[in-house]
Amino acid sequence: MIAETPKPPYYAVIFTSVRTEGDNGYSDVSEKMVELASKQPGFLGMESAREDVGITVSYWEDLESIKVWKRNLEHLAAQKQGKEVWYHSYKTRIARVERDYGFDREVNRD
Amino acid sequence: MIAETPKPPYYAVIFTSVRTEGDNGYSDVSEKMVELASKQPGFLGMESAREDVGITVSYWEDLESIKVWKRNLEHLAAQKQGKEVWYHSYKTRIARVERDYGFDREVNRD
Image 1 (cartoon, chains in turn blue, red):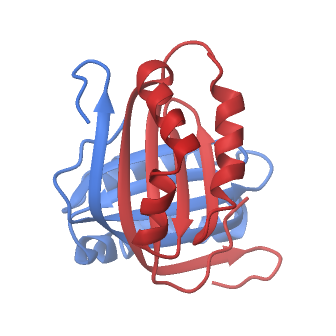
Image 2 (image 1 turned 30 degrees about the vertical axis):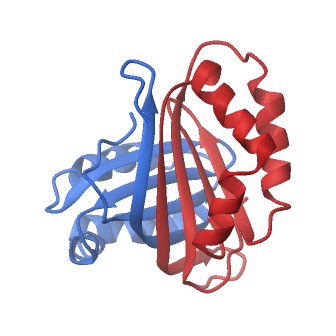
């Protein structure tokens, strides 16, 4: 659920979106894209949740692996449908993770 | 809904969490923290959604403003309750946003 990423630095793609009405094939393609992304070189993990906005954060080793994934042909087709059909609006932010820390009740670390 | 952030560079705090059962006062404090965060110097915006995991991304001008907010007394009290009561686990990632782009159906920009 919470992505198990290595020690920083690594990269995050923060994709925030507002959907249009109706599914219109979104769920199937979305599921396929998660599966496909997770097979890409440099992929480190992904977290996702949707309420009023959807937030998907994917984690990557470097900028090159993000670029390669952005240009993946099936992904490009999905991006096109995203603009034409599924999204009212979205914003993508590419960020370099410089520091992280966490807590887990099972192990009580921070 | 989607935060209107300035041109990069700026910073993102990606907070991903899994909640414990029950509200236990979480909703009230959470709402208060959003209100309080938004009044901090250097605050640029916030996006939030929860399903299996909760993802809250807050955006900040610089690392200093993130540090000041982390040490805010009311926020410290909330962080303590977070560990003791509300969260099963969480991870916080501090990241420097280097690039962003977006799409809005109303204005059709990318």
